[in-house]
Image 1 (cartoon, one colour):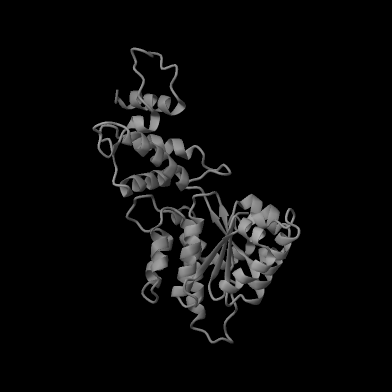
Image 2 (cartoon, one colour):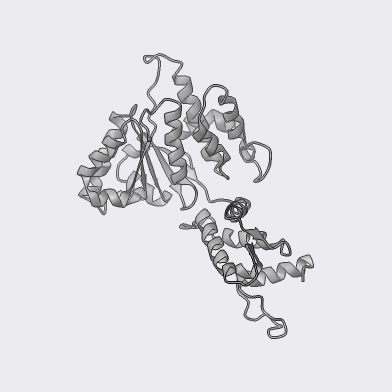
Length: 331
């Protein structure tokens, strides 16, 4: 199951209230998502610029719901006496492909926990990679944990800690992390990040302590519509524009990028960025163009039908574009 029993219990009321497909608002829609609506209610009692920023990120609806649920729980706890509270471990495992916002969300989680008074340390996050920790050794892991006390320790590519292949350092570091997650649950938040299968096979399978101490947060690949929105915002953010004579350009490029969805390693927003950067490089070489992207910047020069009437040498993307032109009368 995508969400563990522990996570379901923690988030059950939020999911029931949100209800199935109503969790999502259409990209570009003015209608707030369920998470945004719930956060708007909480904003009357607490200020968190980090949560505001998270709510404005494209997609990530389930992640946002979890963040709001956590915020609600922590704010409710603050109304209770120390004796009345049930200590909540705030350790997470962010699972998903690259480019889905895991690092940015980890930073926002750290800031949010600091802003609502749960973690005291500014700056609230210490960032490491699993490979760095293995190379530096278990003794340095003690320093990392100490530096992150009263804040957040974020470990990207955490599967590199694999105790199976790193029997000395990896196993020792994992033991220290699990101990800190348990013994200092009220002072430190540990966030692991990586591919779901590698985290589960290399870390969770090595020690049952992970599943009892860490809450899983799943980052799905962006949808085609979300990739399109990211693409448009990135291009406009660089002060470039699109050729008004090719209104189908954005749809074709987004569709092409989206073909990699739901496969391990699909780079999501990173794929969008690399596509945009290659196109801008191509456009920069064009004479008397200005800062406007055209179809040929993404596909290469359009073939001359007199030279190649059968379009025998078209790339799949060029062929898709030609087919689209025929269907929409854009020839």
